[in-house]
Amino acid sequence: MLCCDHYNVRPDIVTLGKALSGGLYPISAVLADDEIMLTIKPGQHGSTYGGNPLSAKIAIEALKIIKEENLCENALKMGNLLINELNKLPKNVVSSVRGKGLLCAIVINESIDAWKICTRLKEKGVLAKNTHTKQIIRIAPPLIINEEQIKEIAGIIKETIESFN
Image (spheres, rainbow, N blue to C red):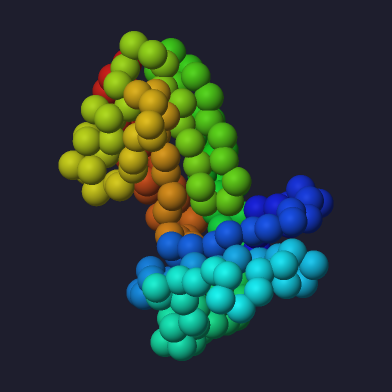
């Protein structure tokens, strides 16, 4: 379920947030062994929103759905398909494509501003975000996306990027 699982790495601490509740309610989590977690004694650290039972229940249900509907497997399969499709983009505009699962990055050559591509993609119904550089576009489709939808957005991305060629 976590990216570190794909690399045979066991971090000392993992932090989770944002999508943990399926985007419904604010929650985050810290994962660590007792050796680390028990160094914090009661009263030493707190959180304004810590320990919210509604957030916890929503997160548990969201995690159940992810498991029951095999969304991790779908993310890996659809992500591989998306990256394969994105690797067909014109090399004179796109210098590289990378990603894991459904979190993908398209690196645009320096002559083109990624923001302009993202704006045009939005006009065509595909939400993408440029990162803190002017050359990287982040694509993060939903975990429930299917093959037909991947091919549709890949086609829109290809058509849009080719228009900058």
